[in-house]
Length: 141
Length: 141
Length: 141
Length: 141
Image (cartoon, rainbow over the protein chains, first blue to last red):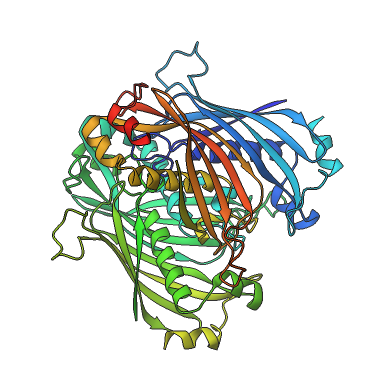
């Protein structure tokens, strides 16, 4: 099960090094996870209101391999690699897309960042970990 | 001359009030301005490298009328309202888009935020204001 | 009634122009307002829990006069300029502090950004405007 | 060699879950690393201008153990755990500080987040990894 989502680099994403600020890849990864969940039928805001439960990030591991710059277009993937009762692990990658002039034979540019994100299910009020609702787990089958 | 760009609200955009953090509308407005410039043929990163000039924001005026929440889909507009030799003023608005279940007769939800952004042209090294290159000004005609 | 709070510029605050990203002055201004309120005895998180009310920003007007860079130390002021029943207007300024080597005769460097922020009091659930609690208004006398 | 730096939680740091947005711990950790480097005599902006070199983050590993909320005061540590020729690994922790009413016998509240950050030295223009200047490495002895 893999999923991919485009992310454009704006001024807000960059830092004085002239490149994307590394912490922002966590935002890019989350946008891709959110759209992946949405594509599976999981609407987080509605769930939060209805089930009093939500996913929270409990672990992140990222490697930064090459920089991205203003106006670059990235493609961010999300793929489930571990499915537990109370948490999921999602493997994610951000690639730089070739600019429009580029050779169509290379569909993807260099890998910029890769990582693993563990998300756990908690009660929205107490933040206590609990079992992921079965209706959600079934979406990943 | 008007332009519109969709913006989805993610966790990164919200604050503990449960709504979009007000400062983030400046980011949403800039994404729309950037895409509007791109649609007109103005690529900011390339310009920065080639012309040693860039747009910077010199004034912002925003009014916040209604809150946006996680998973909301916004439509952000950009419209040129003043064209000077060294600066431009862009009027911008963010509307909440109706959810998919909504009546197709109402194409747009409530106005959430409106504002005016003045952008000036400066040298990338000295930050001194200078005339906007004619090739850029012509794009707005 | 005036108040001042120091803000250091980190990588997170800058953009690819090599300077502080303009939207971040709204964050700097809010840190100063929050510490000003705290100094007056107004703890926002406690209020939110107890009174079911909170301040939200309803209008912002900012002018950007000079850029700040990585490692710069700013001094951010907050001063009440309008006190209504349902909203307050706070005038704010960000100055660059001279580096340690500088002449002690100039206590303050150039003005970088100035603005006015209107904050209104709303119910935390409905976001409807309401009167600022008298116990809070008294703090500003 | 250990170092600690206070970080206050503002609205900008929180998300709609009512807690600090997890990506922001990377910002808090960087503020502590920056102040730790400054305390050792390493000024990053000056170095960037003079040496044409800078530290960039090449790997991050974080675990989120407990949430922080608006107005919380955190204490963030930085400790060198690996010193190579081209990169350093810094272990970091964020603790919640007890509120003023708390028992003075417990100097530190619960551990909220812990992680390891690898920073490498690169050329500011090419982003190619290179040896950390000896004058900087000596600061860590």
